[in-house]
Amino acid sequence: MGVMRTNMKPPLEIRPERPDQPQVVALLGELDAYLAGLYEPEANYILGIQELLAPQVCFMTAWQGDALLGCGAVRTMPGEVATQGESYVEVKRMMVAPAARGQGVAGLLLAALEAAARERFITLALLETGELQAQAVRLYQRCGYVRRAAFGGYPDNGLSLFYAKRLQT
Image (cartoon, rainbow, N blue to C red; front, side, top):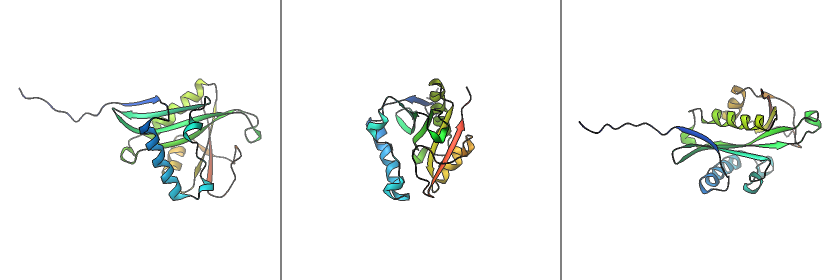
């Protein structure tokens, strides 16, 4: 009997990861280049690698075998006037490699980040994205995020869109 070959891919794994690893740094570099092509530098609100290593940040990655498919982070933030004093997590640095888009990776990453927020007893997730990032806007809306006013000191510059989601405990 001959050897059976399958094209089965390894399972998708979402896990916490350090953002300073070479594959992650490269993916974040792709995200930075993409955003730089859409917006002027002053309209990009990017957390650098060192900021992503801070203890209030949970950084998650999506892997299929040795291939990094995506990443994202939540940063725990103290309450402020724009949140009526309620602490929240801010979704940051969401990126799925172009070859892995359309496979549900971003939704799974976002769900894992929301679960990490709930583990920290935070029930409000906020984010800022750009109006030119149509795929991101569709993802957030599909995942239950609704438009809201600016927060966290972001300027209401006409390019940024602000979203919120109440996380179920």
